[in-house]
Image 1: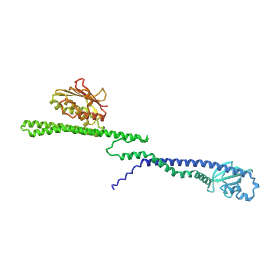
Image 2: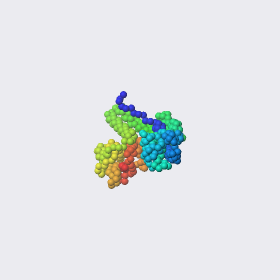
Image 3: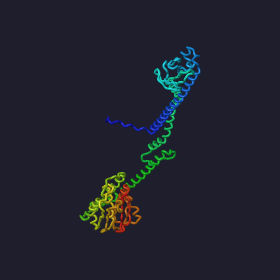
Image 4: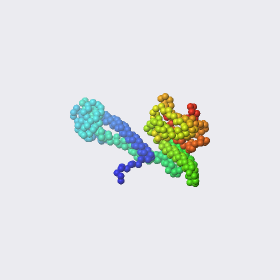
Length: 451
């Protein structure tokens, strides 16, 4: 035990849907019960109030001198049938008659005709007051509020009891319906679980509900992208193996020549060729690793700003010896600090590949210019590399960026991965790449503009 609280497993969609629907049903049922109680209370109150008024009217029709002592002091015929209704006859402050269940205290102090609510003998009463036929006589007919509540409760029970018995059946029906509604999701999960790991075939869409169809379509689109990615990776692996086979075979051949050489000059020449083959293989492996890292880090696009001009000055110093060895001129045109939202390592890779291609495929004594600054006054940042080399026809420009594509007849070794790396960085960061012929130098011109 590590002392950490156990994480509760999330409820299934079926359980959450079922609980939500049942909660709504119970809430609706409770609201209906409360409304029914309120309506029943009003209806029963009006009915019983009318009964009190009717009882008072019947008592008012009987003259007092027509009632004997037994009738005045004991229950009347009305009291025998309606034991919960009591009455009192008062002459001023003197009790003339009352039913056997009536208290001796006045049911209410009200003297005018009408209804009143009172508290007498520890009970709450609903009382109707009416004057008698004789002057100064009051007839009080009352009923306990508790009796009224019992009548209301009995009425509401009679109405809600069938609904209460129906609740379990309703819950069972809701469970059955919800289970049927989520069946397509369970079937979809089962179909995905039964697939082989290498299977990227699309899921069937026949019979899929419209609500689930977007999920199936998204999964099929994901499978399609994964299939394209795997196909591209297989092709990349095959091409990389083929490209590595050439320098490795050359290195092996030159090593064999050096082993069999009988003269120092021949051995030195073979060893120099071996070193050049090793350098070529090393560069190819570095470019493959760069491209692989870019593919694996497709979502890592956030980085602190990098001064593109500073990176350009550093790279120009590193490539100066290479350009000088071939009599080439590398000129920088920097408009000042140019911060761009690109990680510094990626900025170095981007610039180095552009400058390396320009120097490599330009003739000896060629000119290479690098301009960094805003594309327009106050506009977005732009870098532009142009050279005085032979340039490229439109058909070859359209194929730039294809992995391992090389223009034949240049006399230079290479793998064609430099442009793939440039295009990949541009796609990841939304950069616009434009390739055409340089109007100033006549060779190739590459312009990359930040959004």
